[in-house]
Image (cartoon, rainbow, N blue to C red; front, side):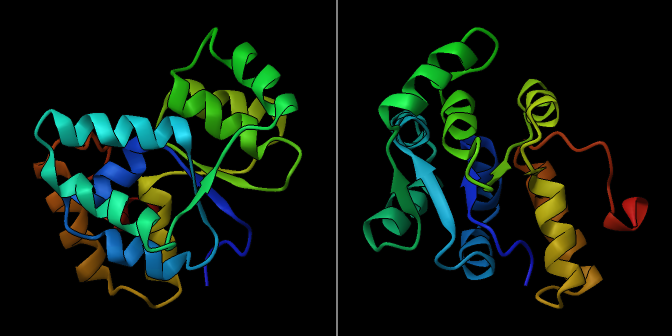
Length: 167
């Protein structure tokens, strides 16, 4: 199974899977290890409010305990404030929760990924999760590429059109 560590999901990665109708895949892959910060939860709630009804699946997953809420500690809140200089609240909260706890940040945000690399925080994103799902046998190559195509159709900017292009 991909990533034995806890993953802290940002709103973009969650949105990509939810908007493609594939949040269940994400939850199955990371059962018991998926975390969502209150800041990311707020971003998802805003997305629902402005018309992205598919994001309700994320709220339902939190309510059912399939995604665990992660609130910032006072120490993490200081890190969060520092990260806000270059990141949105969602990404800043993910990094603050992950730092020093051997957690993986799931984000597609370039600035957040760069900061993760600088700080030694493990990072993955939408493509990495699809690739991991394929590598562990949860998806066939065809299924992974079909999901990627739906994500692109729903607004995901992807530098590739097939996971074959990165393996």
